[in-house]
Picture 1 (cartoon, rainbow, N blue to C red):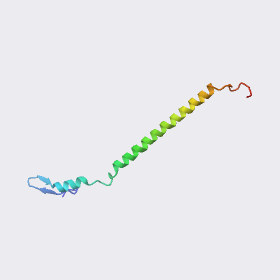
Picture 2: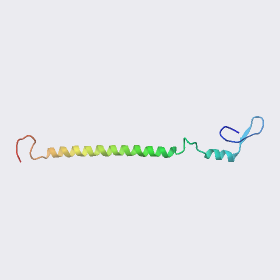
Picture 3: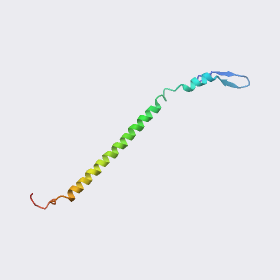
Picture 4: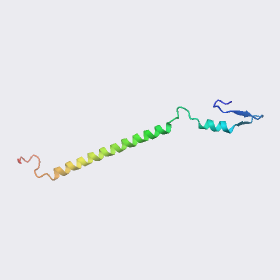
Length: 86
């Protein structure tokens, strides 16, 4: 018996064979540290994508506000500091 749980039959002269059924069952087992690893990576990528999208939206809103302020200043009928009362 090997340390990984596979049964080995010794055929003499150092030749060993592994029974196929035991080998296939051993391949299907997942260690506890790797269980759900794919799911965790997907969640991490989803959170990272959401953060990047949020940053993009935030920057777009800031750019729109800056452009709106520029247009407001450029089209204002009374310049600031002119002393005229409206």
